[in-house]
Length: 495
Image 1 (cartoon, helix red, strand yellow):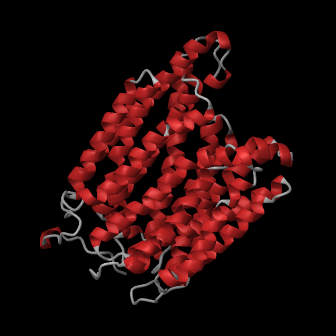
Image 2 (image 1 turned 90 degrees about the horizontal axis):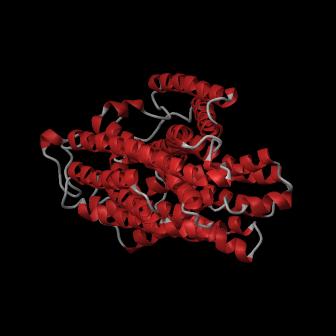
Image 3 (image 1 turned 45 degrees about the vertical axis):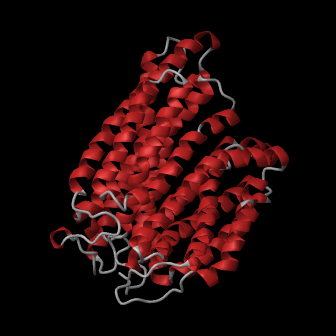
């Protein structure tokens, strides 16, 4: 790989790429505050409300792998511009939807377009920034934009809804997409066919299998988290998705140009980095959901104050993703990632004993600080494991793992927290704190806090094990910008 340093054009191009990524992330969260108002205006039923919220995330998760492979074949820039155009049009359609079905359809289109933007953006960053130190910094900026979206989404939604109608929460994406389409052609590298790129056309059977595996699995996981394991349809959907996933994996192993190259999982560094990011999303993702409910239902914060109370933790995570690439120039990935995760463990242990909101927010902030090195270095390891021509597929795999990790964490650890609550809550308090009678609120709040403590403790143990695994498996990797010794080299996968 060339060590040509990126110039001003590439850095301006990064800003153009980061802004749409920020807006795609915002779109996952900005709708939550608007649902009550739009539901009244559109006369949406409870089922339609759920689909309005969930359809975006479902299709975003389901199409990531497909869009990564399409970008590697069609061209990342072409797919990025196409996705941006569709995202802008779908945002306008969502803003001016006149009934729930139209809004659901627009949100579905937004999810598919968002899946086109994510992996292509990361693949283009790897193409634009060839020098390792610059690349690490650029990935950190991109990750910051994604994290920033999750943080400011509810705040932006609250501000817009205070002054405008509910459709305004969708229109904020339009200027960013217009900017990308206007400036992108001059700033982003042209699509070029390379010798080691995918040669076979996209295998449509694999596309169908991937969707038939991911969509039912994500639906099943989310519904089980929402309603528990006593409903047969979500459980059947999850089992069906897993069975199709087995068929999908077998087909990929038989293809010369697969949608996902599962040979990568034979490499310890790749599977450790990807698995660690999965765990890092799964466990604390559920903890974040529980913390939000803690601030609302236990601490009694109003929604806006609860959202603002989470900002220090998000700011800590953003700062960490900016500092981690600089630290990686002096510290090898193994001790850097493991050291960061040790800070995360300390934060989770504080959460496991926290008795007031200040301690809860401090513990979560410590976790976010520690996660920065894993997120930035892990992304580089995963995408760097393949030739540049296949970076889109690798990027989509990393993002799909994160989507699954979050959904699975909420389902599994949410169930653990619910079980602890039911065991510790006073008789008659009900199955959740939100429905507990006023006379039993003190005991119900204490029971909910116990559930948060147990989940944080479980997460601390799992993150500690992950840190030890990274320290052992990634020990041969050099620091950023340093050439590995001959015996430490792990070649990029070729066809």
